[in-house]
Length: 204
View: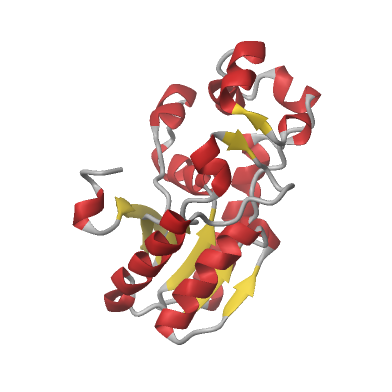
């Protein structure tokens, strides 16, 4: 079983800023609490191995989980955040004012994406599928945790469900939530999206 975990809330999430791979966006106080809670939530799933994005907000989340589960974690570049190019560090409102719905355009692979040095959704899919296939082959029968970001998780969900750009835009992967993937007879299926403590659903 492959368990994707989006990192807990970071300052860029709270401030609605496109952090990308650059800049300092540590976990907020709320984010640290989220990480601690999802770590406890993971206990029954019997995770054997943890991989994480190299971005600090993901690694901090992975550290909290690893300590709770008494495991080590491994950094893997294939789980990294999007390269946001010239959009790095810009607020959502400013981006929308200048370029329209840039998030939808990202899933549509609009020409504005490459023009601004942003990684394409197709490239995100390729790297995510690469680590998924690696884990499926090397850790067959084990439960592997992949700590990453929203769009790498959307890339995996989209691969299984063949979602169109509008559906991808509407899909929100919550901070510190689990997306659980199973592989049966050579095919991937989704067991859960946004799995987390029940009382978080009403407040987030």
